[in-house]
Length: 297
Image (cartoon, rainbow, N blue to C red; front, side, top):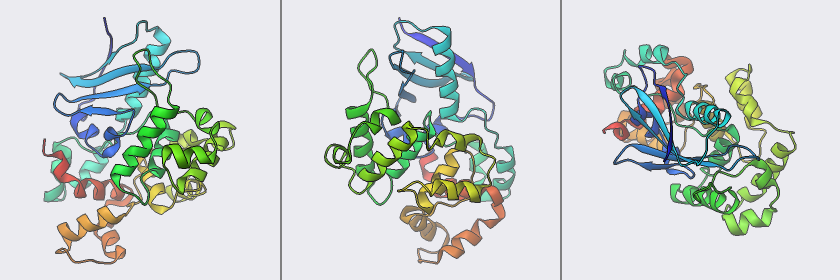
């Protein structure tokens, strides 16, 4: 029999809006069943326990986590619930953001759909590696690199599904492994160096979650990681709860041209000016504005 955990969802939470918030639900070890609105994930439980495969879903104001674990003690149960709340951004508050978007008729759908939470991984390290996998390549290649990392370096659960690899697991592999097996190209050196620094405690991305640095200074710290430029850093800022940066890339720019500029190319300064009234929420405002059609469920 599966072991089922649950917790109450806040009133302004939407499971659908969260899992459809961006592409993370398509990256292993996530696996979205969009027909039944269930999100699969494989939780790393630490060195002493086997990973746990689970299915996450919402029903009547509660979030359920249906696990395939044969046994599930209190400590593991609490960790899985904590990780799930982190993944779904359960404890974040968006009322201040909704006050901004409700002023614009074309953005009122955001509060109505209870959108705003951006799905993330249980660790910042995983989000960091995945973000580097999104730079300068197609989405298909991003998915392939992440799948390779999980398949070749992840730890299997009792039922065979694998976790995202830890920094320790990644640090054991040479640059050639990332180039030849993961097919990560120029990122190969970055992955090997990053994993080693995190494994040795020289760099700790998890500290970014509770950092007291300003968004500007935290962005600078993120950019000290090889492979992280302006776009990647501003995306990572969103995943740790800071929405100051627009994280402009070719897709966002093209969508803005179509929606707000008569399909004419314009300078980034015009895009920045368009969202300046959203203040520290401007990065979230542009993302939801440009991805509105994803939320027609």
